[in-house]
Length: 304
Image 1 (tube, rainbow, N blue to C red):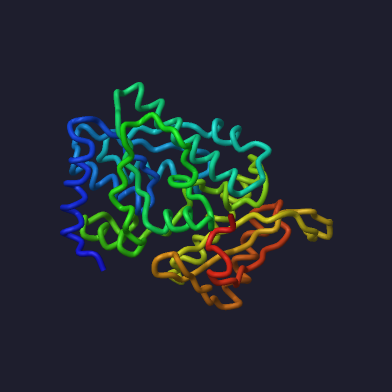
Image 2: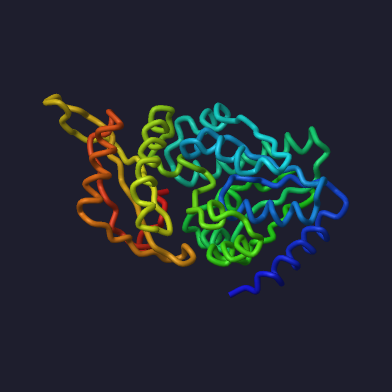
């Protein structure tokens, strides 16, 4: 396990050394990785740090409001890019293509912000599993394999790139970040786009955002490492004695240490029935709910 205090001191020194007297954007998403990265960069750079949160339209329910509240102590810039991301993803079904489109759209937005504010460096919360999975061709993480080959920054600073998720949480606690950040579940950089099998549409985003919120509310009491809903395809159901060709929602809940492997969270049948009942009753266009019992490997934690 990493020595937290030594790591913090070394990371702050590294950021200062790489950025120098220049300005840097830190890509802030509200997850533990980017929050730790922002905290370290803020200590290293102070007023030369430009924190940016991009509202992609692919985030969890209420996420932007939560970001504003959580990071009100920082001079945070919020970019509304919902239409831009959804348009860029239009008609795209391939998971790798979705990840690469998301990565490129992020970086182009950061470049535009950098040009307007004379910023020369990008600081981001890449961690070691992102690199392993991207280089191993398991999936391209938006901040590694999803990045375009040419970017308009003097450098990209990644102070967490040799840490696993559990180590990042240790650093978060040492930095005295609130538990709602240090213990927060992972959320993919491409957001809900990779929890939708196939093309991303406004309709699918609405359904999966609501389903994901229900799953989190119901499953968090069992203390999972990660839990979420994924939208699969359509199937036949019956509501009010009327045939419904509605969406199929898969529920995923796992335990893990670092995200490299994962076991399925065992829940009672009553809990699963309650989740299915809430999703199908509160989201009219959902016909059925299934529970994914596949560990990692052979499955990945996310569906795409």
